[in-house]
Image (cartoon, rainbow, N blue to C red; front, side):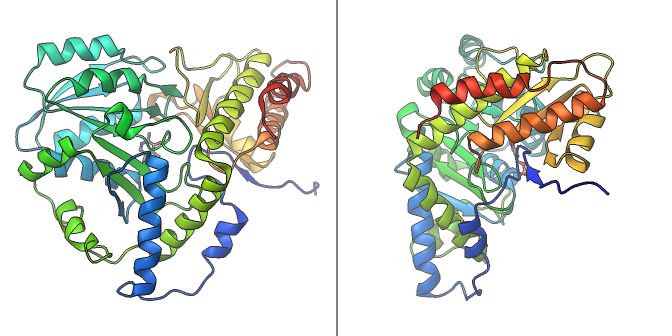
Amino acid sequence: MGMLVKYHLYAPGPVEIPPDVLTEMSKPIFHHRTSQFSEVLVNAWEGLKYVFQTKQHVFILASSGTGAMNAAVENTLSEGDKVIVLSFGKFGERWGKIAKAYGLNVVTLQKEYGYCVEPDEVEKALKEHPDAKAVLLQHSETSTGVSSDLKEIAKIVSKTEAILIVDGITSVGCDEVKMDEWGIDVLVAGSQKSFMIPPGLSFIALSEKAKKYMEKSNLPKFYFDLREEEKALKDKTTAWTPGITLIMALNKAIELMKKEGLENVIKRHTVVSKAVREGVKALGLKLFCKYRLFSKAVTAVEVPEGIDGTQIPKLMRNKYGAEIAGGQGSMKGKIFRLGHLGYVDKGDVVVMLQALEFTLRELGYKFEPGVSLAAANKILFEEYEF
Ligand SMILES: *Cc1c(COP(=O)(O)O)cnc(C)c1O
């Protein structure tokens, strides 16, 4: 029998939940067609605007993040529309699959995993396809740890007739995403990522330009029909039964984000992600992201030669108490992913890297013990703000 090992969840979603938020979820349920719930809902809508950095309404859907991706497509586009999908990982491929499921004409700008489509390539594609109605991409591609140059891409798309549809599921609330200022038309997020609450809610906001697309959209829709939600919001309610408890939790989580300040929340993710990357590099490991921008939510690491990559997440979870993620699809066994979003601070960096060192040591990888912790601490000493 071994000694106590605490469990920590360092996946790129779901993430750990702050104690205050857990307590909030233990409160008794009540009915949603009441003024009591309207108050909760209006509060959540206001809070989401703060995190989305928008004046637009942010719809709350009862689904995982993919539901809002689905809603983004079916509410804005029409039969046979041409769309440009930026595909540089598993979630980009998901945009392609959703668009194809609705019979849209998909032009794919493909990049090898670990890289990203450059803004000038988007510009070129829009010139080649002036009839394209939308550009779809991930801000943070969770499967590879790559971040796209969203701000520059938004500048380019705003100059055209096309709308920009962004999966910000692992960037909204942990990286800079200025929906209105940058000109993002549709922005999607999910509860189990930076929002620090369990899975089950997704969020979506539309610009004025996207709302015009919505008026004309003729793709089949029912459960995620945002026109129904628009009607309901006038009465401070939702079209269907909302995730009451999760919305209460959301309010508590946003209260924590407001208390820290969004700017500090983003700075914290910037510093923490940098410390994790420096720690990993100090071990002699290679980052999977070869692009100039890294995700603030997740760091993907190449499995060193001679090590069974599938063992890394298993040992970290089952023996050393830190649940991380392996590679998805063809990246399985070749990379592992350290999640550092939501309820994470300086201490989590050390716990995560320590568990990684124990794991690598067990798998026979050679390194100086503590080297990753020292490298991470160097960054944290200099950049973590108190
Ligand atoms: C988690 C995630 C999603 C949504 O996945 P769900 O399982 O539907 O919540 C979508 N895009 C990205 C980039 C993600 O990280």
